[in-house]
Image 1 (cartoon, one colour):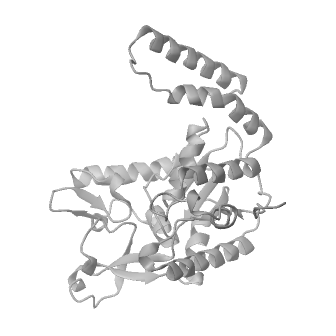
Image 2 (cartoon, one colour):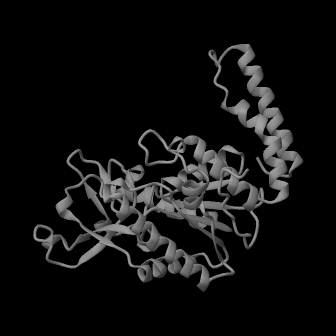
Image 3 (cartoon, rainbow, N blue to C red):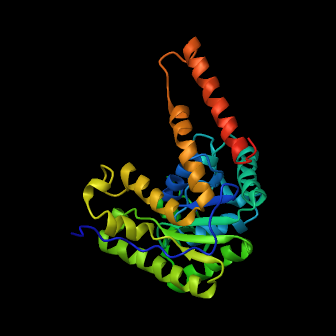
Length: 316
């Protein structure tokens, strides 16, 4: 008796190995899956700019010169923010905030990912009009923001990307990384604030855009169906967090397993099996970290890790 719909995952253009340089950029779902990869002992760069939800914001943070002062503002508590990133790049001075964003850009391009996973949440975005026109919102919006940083809603206009605009933004990101395999995925998070019908429409725009980009770049771009796995394979509210909007930890674990089984090569599968007891040991939190037994446990775990890295010829 078949009691579950199994989503078919297409064969990737190339498999991810233990020495692959993978970067995850986009919504909170990118952070979930990227963190799972790092917890599994595999190298990954995860959301260097913080959480970003739409294709245009992802493109803007990669294209804009981070030294331009109009990209930053100081709040009433004298904290500086960058309009292109989330609050993880906040700082006590303009210079420090600029340095944080510049460092994030540098990490991404120096990482030079051979696989880039873009997780898209919505086609909606916010933009700021010309400063002189903010009160009346008369001017054309000039700056697409990655995060509104809890500033007054009157300072922004909310817009929606069309399918064509989303395709253009995603295609531009692909051109920035011509040698990388691009994995596109749509976040299963449900945007209740839009309304559930409107949230589905937003996802539909993203799905149509993803399909078009894959048609344009079949040798470079693939799709991982996280959205479909959550909605069809995990068709039950027990696979959602208490807010009934985010995937639960169990759902994230399951989607990660589906990603592993299809996208990672056989050597990496063996590595993950060998690494699993070490991963559990590294997560152990003793009651007394400074006791002789705890120190011996950490030393033994480190020794096991060094042997594993040597076995697979991985630099520490």
